[in-house]
Image (cartoon, rainbow, N blue to C red):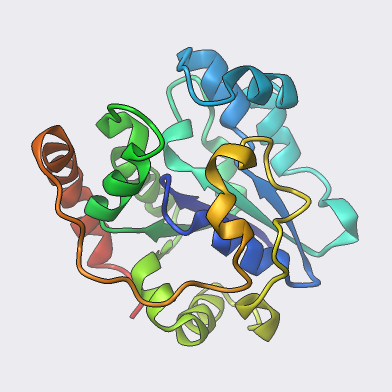
Length: 238
């Protein structure tokens, strides 16, 4: 299985990579299109130069690698993808050969967390529009893509991961519920900026509290993203 997990930033995506990475039968890949995305957009992300140096592949080379032999002799591979990386000029054709799953999170939580690390984020930065486009594409390819909400995973990881595995025809492995602290060997070089809290974790954090209160431009941004989240949430696993 080539499992492509699509999310936006600050969306439990790294914890989910660790969850699948703790299975003996999965290799994991961390944000493979980040280098091409930064080169094509020119965006000044934290550690931009280091990321580009660490990820020199073209988008075409990345796509080919995702469909190539799975490393470490594993039967399955988990691709942690950021939906916002799939800009014009980066092919999506390879998705037809993957099992595509969509990890969603309420935009108020995404905006509050992302804005703490990245100044003045835009709708393009947080991935909701692109995630909806990719979901529609997976359906157009004849797939029945799975949607799972990060809040539901945090509320009951055992039940939701079992439901996810059943939905993609994969045996559940209890190893998905815990992982060693300190990160994963496949972490991208950007881990120094974004992964500090998850590196201290050994499992999924507990249920989240009330939605954060936003105001001004950040409240407007979350409101613009909300319809995309709600449309996908209507199809989520429960």
